[in-house]
Length: 344
Image (tube, rainbow, N blue to C red):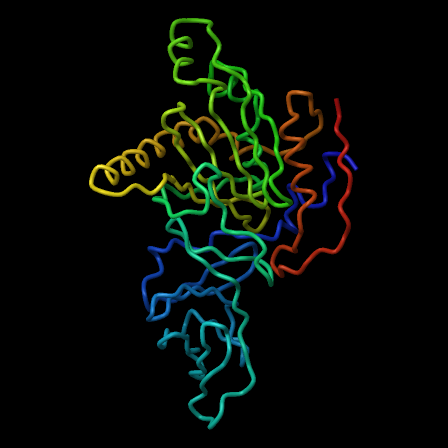
């Protein structure tokens, strides 16, 4: 099996089971009901009167009315058509015209909130945490949703851009040759970290090199093949940017840019965090700007991989080894993994 015929990577009919962003938390106030579409599946997101975000299948199991026409009632939602009420687990708990609610249920998906986003797990049982920055861990952090975007390419193709070593020179004029070393943290998470130092080719690079005791800090952590966290900056202060992607119909990508920093307390600490988030947005905008046109016109076809593409090949192998589900239905794909041919 070659790099051009994969079972998950860059395919529009399947994706990796995992956490995907569903909607901005700010767009889902208490009592709100919103129609959303995630990985090809029509869903509804609502926030209960108690403040809990819930993501469930869009259509009522009674006659198929869309729940977006309904309303939040306490800790559940009522369908507009016949006023059936479903609780936050999807169980039907009240039908006004019946003395006892029928044994009906709407499919509710595992849901959580972090970084100003509501996330949904595209499977039955959650096996991983919401993506996080390895330097910060799962602890509480400060974050802002810094932007939204749509690109005319597959999310996997956007993800490999961040570890495409050569394009940092050809597109971004970075004065250092990166070498991204791969490390698998588990079946769903993989990191790539630069191992090269800033060159001493001129005064500017020599001065910049003094900010690093070892290699130039640039690393990527990938979750489920579609969400990546970037860590960049001098030894004394790292900036963290998350690109959370999901696939649209036709295999294109829509995503959120999230700036993240560790939680700091007190007036001074909050000021530092606010500055860090603002600077992280500047860094993220800089790198995203140079690649915008490429992602709007590329027709990805990996015909001639070279040794310089080693990190990209490692990423594709990593994606191929994860758990695939079908776009739209989210049903598991049972076909076995294939070996990926690495061309030189």
